[in-house]
Length: 207
Length: 427
Image (tube, rainbow over all chains, first blue to last red; front, side, top):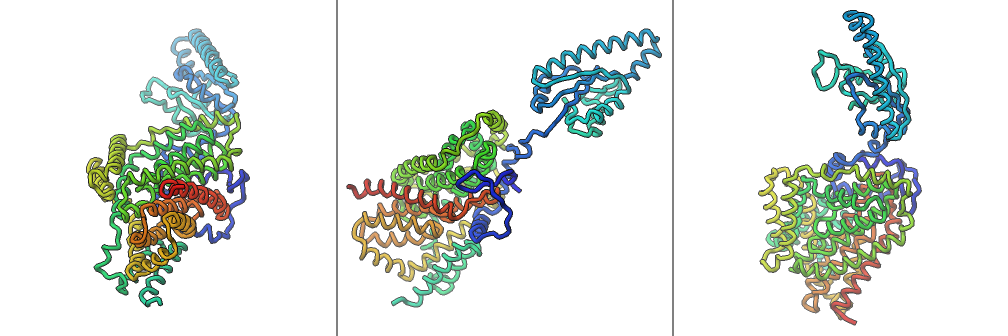
């Protein structure tokens, strides 16, 4: 069907009242118009509609998907949330939850190799960094017009990220493309982001 | 006493007309079948076919179809539609006025069917975004297309046929029909405003949403091929200039269109097989068949007898203008204006021996083009827009159209006849 037929209302001439359609009894007049249209326009209308579709959004595309909550996952690699993203998030008019994830596997490696004290200091520094990032990001999100809350979680990053995404029943999951990056990864986008994108129960926005 | 051959020619003509009106059989097939019968029965002798086949009309249509179909590949027309939509800034009244003017201008130089096919999707989109009843916008588009087509020799098939048969120039059409079309456009827009004006408003809260949706339209994305776009603009502009100059440089309008077609194909290097595939051959064969069917009436003397009857009963040019304009207008609302014009052209030619027929060509053009507004099936643009509306589940009933269409017909033809009267008859 052409995109114009996606209209939620049907109209008749003379007023703005939507009318019922879909009757089977096509009148002679309607059949005549249909015959003449077919003979005059042929398939040209469909071709033109296809060309318009390239740059005119359909009614469905114009609708902003209803999103009741937004989850933004942050870590050491994802960095700050860009201003455009926080602006975009505000268009959903949904509360934003920021979760900073600290990978306990890295902590374990630091503690095992450099000692427990060094591990504790490392964790402290990571938590400070997390709080600082969450504070500035929250301010950015609130400035854009959304409400915001934040928390720091420690755990196996991949599992924890997936658990957070499932537990929050978010309408939108937001990830930086470097989220969950490791020293061995050298692509433009981290494999963990790709995994989360596949497993996420909601749309995923990657910046 | 009607002779058998005359009777057969009349019967074939009426039967073909009926088939064209009803369209259960494709109009092209109906016209070709009618032509085949009159040629097979030697009512129109084989040797006489070139006499009746108006190649001026057919080649002009063909040339313009090639130019438009090549230019269309560049996204030129979608670009214009988006720019106009943005310029309207989400105001329903501005959309109505700007798209009416755009439709009239494009229709004055391109065929009406292509014009409305290209513009209607954008109008429906805008109506949807503005949450407006699309009906006033669609009606405005139909009326503007038919009025705009009246303004030039190439704007509407009846004018092309009249121009080819009478030898009138492009500039004569502009000078005689242009002012009528301009005044009629203003009158029709005023009428539509009076009828629908109170509904053409958007809630202030919706304005930002509409504005955002319009800003989301990217006219640059519509341009599929920038080089082809530029070349198309240049060729179309050149062809229009050549139409203005054709009488000075001694070129027939059909030749101007064919030269333009050759130029755009050579310059843009578009594959000719693909472009020629897009030419509306059924329309061209429809014209060909129709010319032969009407030719049978000329060949058998039916048209001459009709002309004698008119000459015996009509005594002045003023009377002729009134009769032809109003008859053509109301008849065009009932039957398609193309076969009607094909029939009236030889009649007016026959009147040439008894009266000054120069103003009658304008009366015919006026009636045939503006009469198309009278009913849903009066002109091709009406059918195409209503067909698209039907696909979008927008209902415009035959009677609803007839009420407003007839009002527009009477007012616009009256304005046109008044201007012709002042010009050629005087007070």
